[in-house]
Image 1 (spheres, helix red, strand yellow):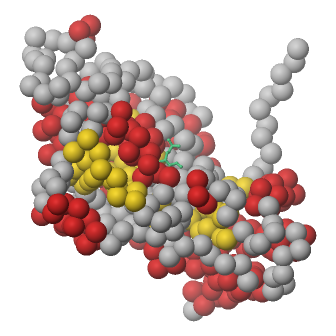
Image 2 (cartoon, protein in one colour):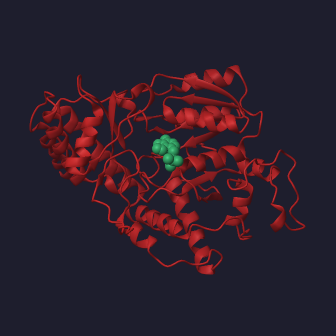
Length: 409
Ligand SMILES: Cc1ncc(COP(=O)(O)O)c(C=O)c1O
């Protein structure tokens, strides 16, 4: 039997992740492998930590990568920071809020869920009310809820959590690198992100950062595995972290000058993240946020002009994801399938209560380009017409172009 060489069809990835990797990132991944303790490689790790601090807008010493997808990054931080029996408040406004609950339940946390209709976000007063009623070790929140396209404002919530002595652990998987995230200014105790969205590398690494308060907890839970421990490695006083691979304590030692021989590094993935972060540094965060915001404005102007309706509380829509209500009598899967098969453009459907009701369009990282927005609007118009949806022909692309023209003035 013969197996063909991998030669994927060209695609325009306009899903809320994964998106197109920057070509610079793909080139970096082709570099030859270094040993993980080679000083050339450890120097690269230190640079990655430094660039990550810029992207997270933090001074946290503990800012590094975990070889896992974003959900593994969430699991690493939550499993390390939350001990069995700790009370954690989870305000959920979509699928990923429930993922936090799922992970925390498995950590043995005593969780309280606050739930909200999908397509809305929480008011800070609701969080304060809950923290007043009971005392919590932590609040775990999603910043950009990819399943609904909503973005939760966090600045006031950071202040409220500080006031009530609760850690604030935030999933910025979908927003970091595309929308504003200010870990220190917003008083986030920990923040987790992934690589396949606005960071624009392939999936496979998680970016994490956490403050000294969490560092202290981790220190008290530290237990170095027997085969590599030294006489100085005394077990901490709190319950150990119930994972070896996702063990914050040993990962800290791996990323520190000690270079604890914990796991074998995914070196090519580290090259990818290093280059993706360099791309962000070159562009600057401010310019990157502005690029995503302009492309979002053009996309929404185009969709509105076409006569399609945008889902959810528009004031809190993420600039990097837009959901449209699927018009009556149309099968969302057919729209998505035709865009992929006829135009090579991929967008996404949704889950849970929004399954079959909305289509989600990503505007993230390297995929967030004027060219992609215009091509998508043109293709969407053709596919909607083919499905007998009454839309204002020719208006979508024109409205988006007008946004770009005005931005140039
Ligand atoms: C907000 C959010 N959190 C977590 C995840 C899980 O990420 P991963 O699939 O990289 O594990 C996703 C993925 O889509 C996400 O959008």
